[in-house]
Picture: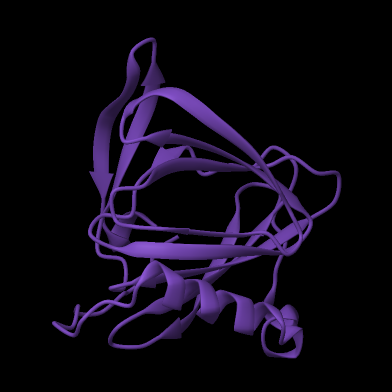
Length: 162
């Protein structure tokens, strides 16, 4: 899916705590986003829902078997909330083991800085929906594979690969 993210602004980025407040506020207003959600079995569906100079918000739907793979968010910090359903998150402190496994139920919020690497995956029975905020808006993401000693960077993606 290709998305034009536009130019990045030199404005100061929002903190993870401010991004947390953004996604919590939006999750409490399903009339603003629920009608936009689409479910696709082949891959996760996503749409950039808000695009401001200092942050953006993505709406993502999840079905069984769908996951992000290990990735970072480039120079962006972020936060996401599970608005509906249930997900799992695998995260590392940097690229070193041990791996932290979290179960994320509806209402769970995760906030993080730009050095955060994780894999988010559907673990529940029915569909899941999440809202993700990033600041500054996403410009690039790196992909990783999990090996015996930790994560190994395998590539980088820009907006043209999303």
